[in-house]
Length: 564
Image (cartoon, rainbow, N blue to C red; front, side):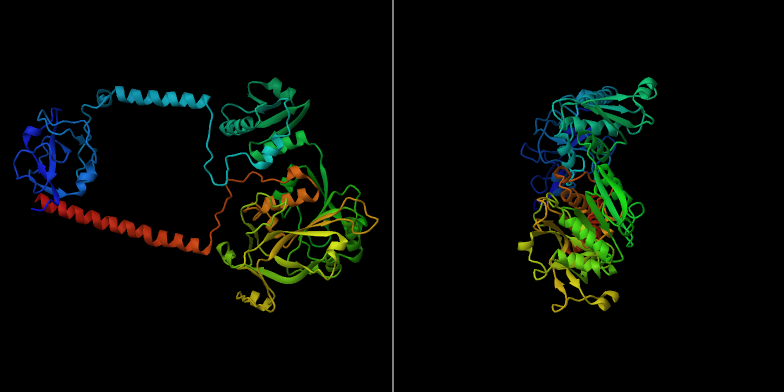
């Protein structure tokens, strides 16, 4: 008989001495006649069965039982027979009533005890809990390092010298934010060993609350070199913002142009406004037509999402401002009149050619189903784009290019740097009818083939002989919707814009990767990746369950047939 199965011996002489159990040995079928005593060369496999649950001697089982129950010899010997020592494995699906036998194993008496084993487990748990409360350590396994201090935070902490930085955290012990505050402040302490902190309960220490002017639970008082800054909340953005004001209290005067249908900072991008203020930018509204001049303290001018073009007088003021070393960041949407008239002349002075073409990117179908959602996947080398490694999304972007015929950049001293580009599969579509019908097609004669530039930085040096040595800086984005609360947290949108603002005002410490929001990290997949995931979820996973069910049914039928 072919040795295709395992032989089950139910000889009572092989019973174990442990009360309530008996042992049975499995041998290859065909190697031993039924009923003959096994020798020491048999398979070292042992099954345990409760007394009273009889197993038919001579039953044949599949070879898979050998690997299913036990792949290696161990420490249990049949009752005094002198045969090979074997191991009893835990209960399995074939015999659900089989328990694990713990005989002749080190510490088996403790593990069999209904009292000592639970006490041992509870004691070890309490010991580990006590050690974890005194020894702090963590490993950030997230791909985007969500639980590690960001580059901008590390840059700020490096500015603190040997003089200790102190943090007084006013928080009750029972507060739900206590554990989060402890974990965050430990990260800062790890990066800055001179940091000293203490938790103060406002309920138990009302006099200290009054002394330091604390008006709510959850405030932190940072002190360094006799100066103090208060923050509210427990997040890396809040902590770093307070430390930035402590080590560099300088503020930057930033004016937002108004009067051309621009986006309102309070209504359209409140989150971005908050982040700008946290980084020491003071935002003010500037109705340029009414003011008639640009304020002398204007360190930066923002022009975000205008719908109407500049007046000739306004364009002349901005041109003079840039030539005299001014700084501007402009976000210009497509399909609006803001790029015409005096605005067009203003941009042409810089050598930037604005057209009416709209960027089409087929990758955008992964976001909301249409193809106007341009994605920037390439970041040419520049200080602004340093460290950016994720996509930036522009819901509706325009294209622009540089015309060397309009301005001699080498003579005029205009240096241009592309910041963000689409993939090669995107293009700038000129046919408005195809856009309305949602069926754009690339036309080599009229369209601009990708990669399409979505953002550009310009640096002006000595445009006229009477200029000072300080040159103007100018950053242009082909979209403004990417700054709204709906999109600004996606990918590198926030970092790209804030880095551009910091570069414009020559603030090197403001150019860095900022803390990411762990609650808003969408996964952006390519078309092939989406297809593979769909095949796996819809086809592979259900198919595996079906095959597993068929296998289980066939195995059960075969077992019952053999038993009968």
